[in-house]
Amino acid sequence: MSHAFRHLAAALLLGASLGIVRSPAWGADATFVGVLATAVEPDAVKALELSDEVRDKLIKLVDEREVEATNLALEIKDLPAAERTARLQPFVAESERLGMELLTDVQKTKLGQLRIAKLGMLGLGDPQIAGQLAIDPEKQPAIDKILASYKEVLATGSDVQKSTAKKIYEGQLAALLTPEQKAKWEELAGPMLAVVTAQNAAAAAASASRASPPGVITPSSPGRAGSSLRPETVAQMGVPAEKGPNGEILLQFNFNYAPWQNVLEWFATQAELSFTADEWPQGTFNYTTDKRKYTPEQALDLIKMLMLFNIANGPVPTPWVPIKKPEELDNLGEFELVSCIFQLSRMAPEDAEIEARKLVGPLGSVVLLSKAKQLYVVETVNKLLAIRNMIEAVENPEVKDERLEIIKLQVLLP
Image 1: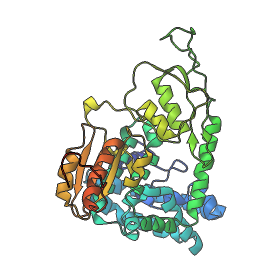
Image 2: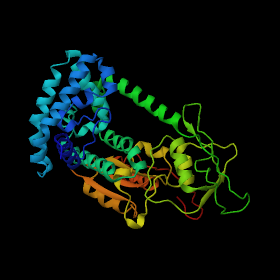
Image 3: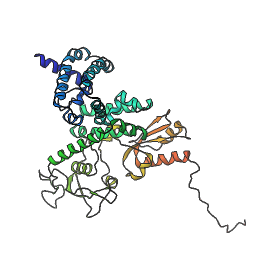
Image 4: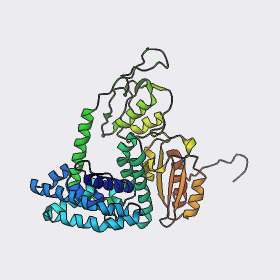
């Protein structure tokens, strides 16, 4: 085995055990060089306004440090994750120190902001970022669970799941933050947040321009139910979404013998929603609404489901269930499966849990967060509304539907 190949094998071995994804630009691995992996990415070089000389020095330093990490990687590859991280920390810190010596103070600040912006909400797993945001220790297990699910999807998920995972899990993490913490995170990301957002938008636009235009779903033999589709009709009917007067998305159905997979993928794309499916329904979908248009919530009630899971195999995994606030439930389709955190004040958490369990069905689950006096419930919106009403009846007993009814006595005297 050659010297260079041994270095590569050691790095890949440790990277695989840690679930690390290497930087696609230069191959830099944050496992060994920390934030320098971000600094040598082409878009970061531009954002930081690095000279060619400094860029080349950083790339050379990153390569040297990864080569030096070979022996350490082999030594710690069989250790538990916590011990591996502890052993790597001094090496990573030294890599970052050497790299920072090449940067100006302004570039150092921008690099820190750029790292936070690129990590997004997934950066909540970083102890330093979590500390700066003053994350409630009671919420840390929930954050760790979401991050673990994200890594699992990257390791074992389908291409569709991997492509949508970051958006889905970032949304779940963001839902755990208070408005003040979100504002603080934006402050930490600074001007680099706008830079990364623009870069992501440009990348998405470039990807969309390279994609094939949508096909038209038509049966190979018109008028015959169940007839097969021509090979070229693999995409959704080309009815793009429109924007309503208030900027809301409006969808129009026009499907004829369309496979359910195509229908659901069309809906996810047009409604700007993330999509994943483990299994597909059999059969085809026929529905035309002429000129009528639906909001995504109304369309979802028609389709019934966006994410498809075989509930015979157990409840839908909670990482795939979006988190909504209690006040948002009124604007959702009644059959949407979502999760909701109810804050309790007067009602004893244990009592709320008992009452909520009476209302949930086989798809639902109830988790009591006793210290925070909160109830975390996964259910369809119609049942979550019933749970919300039950809690509000105890929390706000003065707000009741009390009416005065006058009964005229016809037989008895007053």
